[in-house]
Length: 289
Image (cartoon, rainbow, N blue to C red; front, side):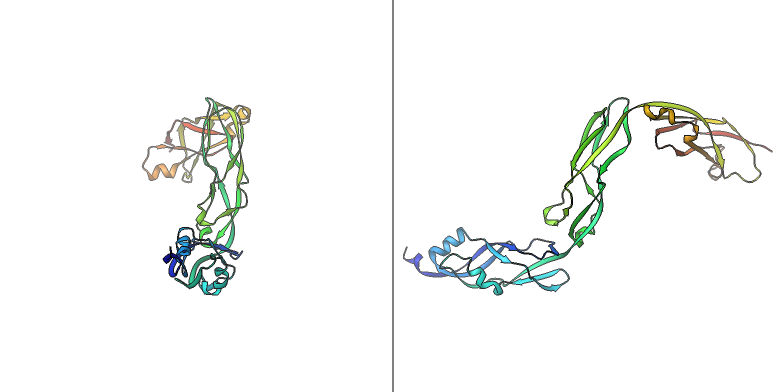
């Protein structure tokens, strides 16, 4: 006991908390979480300090610039403030490392789109009308410039819906980046909606056009029209007619590929249509003399 009451020297590792970091800058990596301080104190105080070290607050409002994103603080300049946070009768002799390095990036902002992460299926005969809507469809994120340059979008947490037969309106949280990246959002969640309707199949006979036909060439085709089958919502069924589609056959493509027939391609269709299919897939033709 007598020995422990005598004065000794030892190094204690103290946890630290950084206060008042500059508002226009963000940490791009975590600085050291502990600092080594060589102290003078009684054996009792040293043992207590090693077992239960105080958390030391480091004033960080004015780090000194070194290069690019490298900054540093000198602990010796805060010696008095740190000494006041030590246990009574524990005196600082010196700091094991006098400087603390910071990697600080400029606080920047940018607008990025929100991507829906969905796992959705529909009941028999039902489908989504249009697309899943997200509002807002973009958000403002803030963080270190070097990090924001790598971010092209943010994603929602997974939206799981099975066998849907009714329209939905949901709130979806946004996925967070790791805390160490220091990326913040102006909103934490978005509204997600989707219109679900009963769908039916339709069939139409429509004419097709032939493109890239040499001047003066006349050809006869068989058949003269093609069949298109498609899916459309019941509410839009009456809006679909032959003008809802454009089908073309490219004579030059057939010639280039040495085909003896034309290949019909659906080049335009109404945005009300889903899963349009053409039949037949080849058109025979005869060149008129």
